[in-house]
Image (cartoon, rainbow, N blue to C red; front, side, top):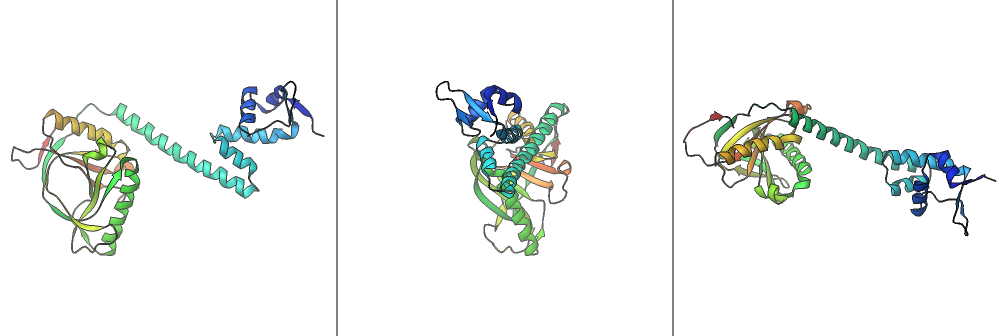
Length: 280
């Protein structure tokens, strides 16, 4: 017969506080073997110690209580391992996101005080292959990656010749209301055969203030901020989508530090000049 342990003794044996043990009892994660009906004292069994030790380790990995319960109730090692592996995958994803956020914050804090050069550019209309959709801002990254992947696949399959770097057009509503029209495109020479959501388009002409962003797009908002401040300070802004041109991207290198993205803000041009470099 297993030895009965008071909640205090069980707490010392498992390194789970009395408060935590009471909480686990209430939520059905680790119930005592018996409860005295008169005093309400909880009593545990020594054969519950291994389960408590598993719980400690899973909770140290921030596994939610329902998932811990599923691990303890799983039928066999394979089922338990599948639940644990899924949680570890989520942790790795969160860790990668945290590292990216830390790197972006350091870049923001350590960036040099010297201003980024801003260029005024006249962009002519360009025939292209594109994907256009109304996108929710939280889904933008996955939509953008998928759409660009489709475009590159169609360019290759139809043996089209790229006539310039790929890019994107993003309506103001994406930023102001978290939902709006987005278009990704690759300028091409040749006849485009529509396939699925991929279709021939004409990227419209525009007058742009342009800044080049170097590195991962996770902190491209810093470049947007610089460019937006410049445009507003000089009272140049007009309605229209902002643009991105991917001069060097994941299609060219796996190293995000080598990526180069030009960000273009629509402006009013009254100087009649061609390409002109300026600083904010």
